[in-house]
Amino acid sequence: MARPLAGPQTLLRTLNGRAILETLARRGPLTRAELVAETGLSRTAVTQVLRMLEASSAVAAAGVDRDTRGPAAGRVALHPQLGFAAAVHVDAHAAHVALVDPAGAVRAETHAAFPPRGDRVQHIAGLVDACRRTVTGPLLLAVVGIPGIVTADGGIRDDQGPDGGAFKNGLAVRLGCPVRVENDVNLAALAELSEGTGAGVSSFALLLLDDGLGAGIVIDGSLHRGFSGVAGEVMYLPQSPLPIGAPVLGDAVVRDLALAHGRDPDETIDQHLDAAWAGDAAALAMTAEMGRRLTLIAGSIALVLDPEAFLLSGTAAHPALARAAAEFAEELAPQLPLTLVVSSFGPEAPLVGAVGEAASALRASVFARLLPASDRSRR
Image (cartoon, rainbow, N blue to C red; front, side):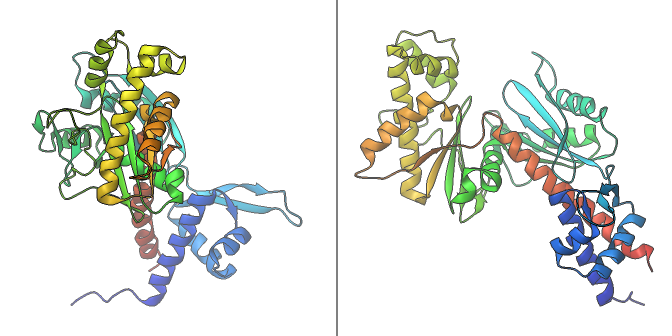
């Protein structure tokens, strides 16, 4: 015989429970009276749901409110050992790991360069292990931002071809939890969308320059990944007089520009830009060309998608390059107005995005697990 569907009281408890858990995740420890005000639930409903959540170890006592008048009221918070998610940013040189709790707070963090001949899965897992030694609770999932094209199933496409999900699966086995792989520039765009400059516009393209150039595209408040994950791979957009397929901007391009302008090709992009900001004539000429190329990329995107703004992130946010791009954009303005804005976040914008996505996924996982268990415990 089929099991009867849950009744309206069970559904109501689940909805009320989620409202309280989400509120505690967003606001931190609160009294019952504060939960009533925040959620709009009755005091009786809050009391009943808190009793259910305490029985399932979803929430715990978190001190006493002595700041308001009247008798001291106890505060409750999400249980400190609900679990953690790992947020990881991987670039060509290093990995940066942060452990976050369901409220989105970073509880541990570490960063280290990849060894010359080491395995990157083991290196990342070792950093996660180091973070886990400083906290108590299970690791439930990981969100990893990487450079390159990420397919819908988490496979990685780069110059060496697809990895068939080997990196994702290998890391999941080593960490013992589900792993979500995401393009690093897309994560930077999500950070801007939720907390940064991008939160105030309906559509934008984030242009992030690191070893290469990539774009994170947000249309009507939603990240656009494309059918196969290729959306935003703008480094190879045709640009005269460059041959088709030549990179427009990145480490290799800047080395060639340095040679052409009599500067040290072994210096980093940031070193050239620092010199330009200090007034070095050769570096200024290099930076002007970089700004021209960056702005033409923005113009190509504008002619197709017409976003409200372009956010300059990573090295593209360096004041010398941002100024050069703005100057060239001003020349284009009569034909194609472009709004260029510096990103709210620095080089670790992809990690900021990974932290936000990891915390959101962790809350969904934890709350989905806790609420059905709580309902069963009361039957």
